[in-house]
Image 1: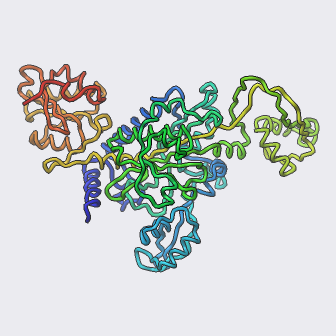
Image 2: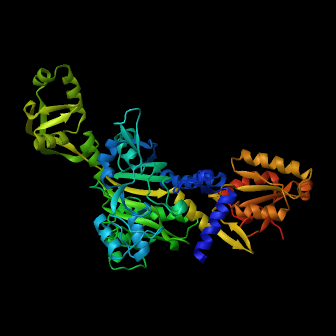
Length: 582
């Protein structure tokens, strides 16, 4: 076992033993790609989610809001979004033992070259040319094919009513865009954020919490006017330095990132959009706030064949970890107008927004008229239903379909062209409708949880200290009587109960020596240990011990209830808590 793997194994051992995470359904042998979060892991993940909310929602609450949409998604949504066609990975099967593998990963492991984005026939050719065998039985591998990563289900009792578990939270935000836009009084820019569970039917996940079949995603879909793409918040971050590997650098096989300011990245056209640049800067601040240094973060641009089908430009936000090197914790994508335009085309609903001109303009437009009398003659009582569907549909979409097909398929009926009239008129327009463009920062919570644990894991004098940032640590303070005797226990219990009223997470521990209890507290990342000793009975003071430095201060009990929450929030230093203990 090498040093890098050794660190990973130590973190996993700690995580399982102390209640951060473990493999799901392990009493039945476990299922790859599924993990349980234990008592500490569940709280740590929630605290990471709250930290994300602080950086992406609360700091921008004037124009970014949070919603919640279902995991189960109708087939029509993913037809429109392109996921049914594009959300696949290459799979290959062993002809001897029948095991299936992710073909591109197998090729990369055996050849050391990146093959992301290659077609199945190209991967098949590489496998044959390099005589790549099954890693389990050394058998011959078959032809590479595409495998859908969507989990399929049925909605209700009808087999034809197909649905899927969402692989991202984005589509629920796109389909709800118009509702949110109207609720927010029709203003752009507008961000819609969401934290939720997603499912991806990974072929062969083998990286613990790094590659999961079900996980939590934290996403913002940020909508803006493409004719007003400038970001008014850019001056706040324009001098922030980011470590970046551009697409051209990747083509030249340059592995070392360059360091540029946000403004330089835009000026050199390394980043195509100001809002995308702004969220890159916010994203690295957020990840740094989890205890991961800036020098261990890189933004790597995806090449065209590596990008998702909806993306104009994408940067993976990478963090370096011990076993796997640079792993993706977030994707920052400029999705343009792709998603809304596709949903407009497939749903025929108007998802455009209105921009008012500074002065009215004379504009030539095409108008679609329906012969209501003939419609009623041909379709009888269904004519009202058809007229309602036409009135609710995007007229531009209807015009295009009428011109291309010679009829409209709407409300379950095929309406011939003869029942419509297209008129070109000149009108004075005070504004126009357009489709907003979108920038998306999207984070995986479980990957961040693992990376946070790895960067917190330290050894001091042979003991493990989990140096988690104070405000995301699952437990904020441990209350410890010096010895397990009355009246120390009674006072410690009273302090513990009062601390719970401050809404802090605390634990009470009276088992074993005080040194052993300090070590247990350090190992799970508790920032403060509050010790009740015999002096506490005399003068109502207690000792506070810092997890990272092991320094101690003395503080009045009543002051502790006020000062400890401020310390956890970072509003007080340790020295400001009380009088140093020599």
